[in-house]
Every structure is written in C-alpha cells, then in structure tokens.
Length: 474
Image (cartoon, rainbow, N blue to C red; front, side, top):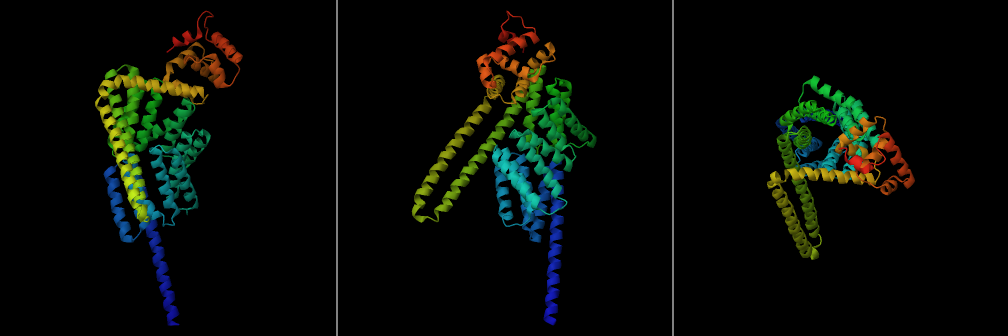
C-alpha cells in the first residue's frame, strides 16, 4: 500500500514538473520571439544580439534545446538582412540539427519560413517556395498559441512574395490579404502596394501605400515598416513625375536606413537606385553619378557575398565527399585527390571572379556613364523579349522605360485602349507587321488594319512613315 502511495506521489511530482517545464518553455518562446521581432523591425542590432545571447544561456540552464534553436534562427535571420549568408547557413545548420529531433511544429514552421527567405535571397526561388510550403504544413499542425498568428502572418507574406515572383498574381494577392487580416501594422499594406504597383494598376497602389505611409508617420517610428513605406511612396511619386515629393520620401527612407542599416543593410541599394533615377530625370548629373556609384558599390557587395556562399556550398559538398571516403578506405586516395583538385579549381575560379569584381570597382568612376547606357540597353533587350513572348508584363515594363512615350500617346488620344498601347509599343520597338502577327498569333491582314486604325486615332498623315512618327516620340 505504501509502495502504491509513493508511486502515485512520484507520478504527480513528475507530471507537475513536466507541466511547469512546458509552461516555462512557452513563456520563453513568447518573450524571446516578441522581443526579437520588436528589435528587428526597429533596427536595434545590439539589443537583438544581446537578447539572443541572454536567452541562449537561459535555454542552456533550462536544458531547453528548442530554445537554443530559436536563438540560432533569430541570428540567422539577422545575418540574411546583413547579406552575411555564410554565417546564416552555419546558424541554420545548428538549428536544424536540434529541430530534427523536436516534436514542436511551431518551431519547425518558424525555421522553414526563415530558411525559405534565405533561399529567396540566394535567388533559389523554387527552394524558397518549397520551404515556405513546409512552414505552412507545420503551422497547420501546431497547437494554438500566442505566437501562431505572428508566424502565420510572416508565412502568408512570404508566400505572397514568392507567388508574385512566379507570376501567379491572383494567388499572391490572396495571401497578402490573408496576412493583412493577421497584422495591420502597415507591413502587409506595403507588400500589397508594391505588388499592385509592379504588376497591376499603379493608381490602385496609391490606396495601399498611403495607408502604410500614414500609419508610419502617425506612429513616428523609424523602423523597417517606415523604411519600406517611404521607399515605395518615393517610387510612386517618381513614376508620376512628382519629383519634389519623391525626393522627400526617398530622403526620409535614406535617413531611416542610416538608423536601421545594421539590420536592413541590404535595403540601401534600392533607395540609391531610386535616387539615381530621380536625379537623372531632374538633370542633377552630379547627384545622379553619386547615387549610381553608391548603388554599384552596394550591388558589388551583394554579389561578392553570394559568390562566397556558393563557394561555401561547394566546399561543403567536397567535405561530405571526404567524410564518405573514410567508409571506403580502398578508394580514399582517389576521392581525396579529386576533391583536393576540385577545391583548387574552385578556389581559382572564385579568385578570378573576385579579382574581376575588384578591378571593375576601381574603374567604376570612368565607366559610370557607360553603365547608365548599359542598364538602359539591358532593359530594352528584356522588353523586346517580353514582346516576343506576348508576355502580360510587356506593357508595364515598357512604361517604366518609356514613360513619356505612353503619356504623349494618351495626350493625343486619351481613349486609347491597353491593346492599342501595346501595339504602339511594338511599333516603337520596330517590330515588323509580320513579327507582330507572329508574336500575337493573328493574321498579317489584321495587323495592317490595326495600323490603319492607329493612324486615324493618332492623326498620322498617310505620307508619314508610321515607324518614323513613333521615333519622334520620346
């Protein structure tokens, strides 16, 4: 009887301890992730680092391995923003090693969502999409908690971004709106306006970006949301030639970037590029050159970081090969030798690329004007390819490169339809009637009829060559 009584007491004590441990772990997760996100959005680098160091030690004392994994994920996410991809990969590997033995679906959802973003930044869109779907699967299986909606918001937002990059626009917009329902701070509004601005109706974008912009100004915070909102607002004003307003918004974004750049280091190049376009259009060549150089330097740093990560991937592969060799002693000499040769070739390849990048950086001052021309040529080639494919994005990209051309056409005849603007754009690019018929899959006779209707709508005299007429429009 006494033995049974002691067993029951022991069971109750263990159960109580287990329940207390779980409650402590939940409190740990909530406090860490909420505070981490606050510091991340605020661009508070030192606070974020110290927070995760402190919580890592606490997790160690609690013997809470999943807590350590969360700290690794937080720091990996920070290093993505800093474009320090090599450190990110190491931290992700540490987190995954722990979470492979975990049964917590919420933690796994957090891991795969951030790991998806990592792969997106490395320009591996298919992998990013794959890992985001993994995150979605795990979040659905997780128990309800105070953190579930926060993580789900981030998953929805990233899913929308990947879908828009895959040109699945309707699905993308659906996920952006799902995200907005979970978090109304303005971040989802920024994403929606960015999506609408790039792929749909630029006028509709104004509604969403204004909401985000006003929320950022009312809150008075100079954080990641305000940085995002001011940048897109500046791009909107830039597109509509409201250059004074564009300059104010972009300079505000630049000011916020200075404060938050230790976390949002990657963002500066987008602002530099927008300011370059602004000053090119307003005729301030000195400032245009300054921001062109700043943009090129930032772009160089990004590519160098990407290259280093690619090298790390290759070295990791070779290391695995070498480890495998220990299980095949009779083949070890050849495998190690080939691996060493491969590493040498990889090193030589990386050295040549980095040397080339450094050389390009030194002569950037001389090439600045050529770089401007080169950028425009690349855009034109891209537009021509979109036209050949009859891609829905053709007109939007064309408008970005030739904004004055479309404006002049609509001044002559405001009633021109999108299909007619597309036709005029193709003529501007000197597509022949035969080519347009082939690319748009209509008969050659229909193209001749279209030309006739366009002549009438734009009052082009019969003796004027239609291609010459469009060449005179900028």
